[in-house]
Length: 137
Image 1 (cartoon, rainbow, N blue to C red):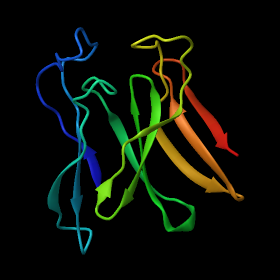
Image 2: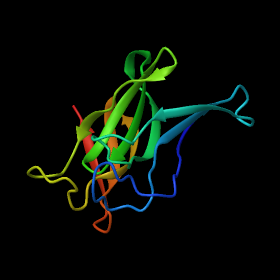
Image 3: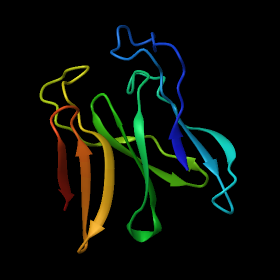
Image 4: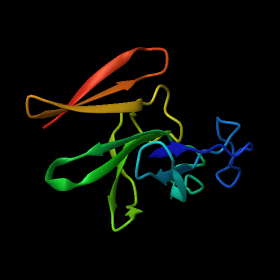
């Protein structure tokens, strides 16, 4: 299980950021799905890429036995691969940003993925705009 943690202060190393909290992603394991053992930080948002903010973790059993963690940050939706008991460096996989803005307006967030008829569908929100779908090809 991956979930967001909240540190009750702004991430100040990146300068002025929009959120008042810092959100790293944490993970825990369970043998029975009822009792969980904390494992620590899955991905740390306290860096220049995420500027203290990542949210909406979604673990996905990907093709070929790969386990991916999808999440969102200020720039868009990222994924990380879980191998050898650790998460890889996140890769930006989907963004609606135009230009080189530090904090684009209405980035896609809270990804949910499902494989339907052999195609990966990702549903995501855009703040007050609505819910959208993107299809991986």
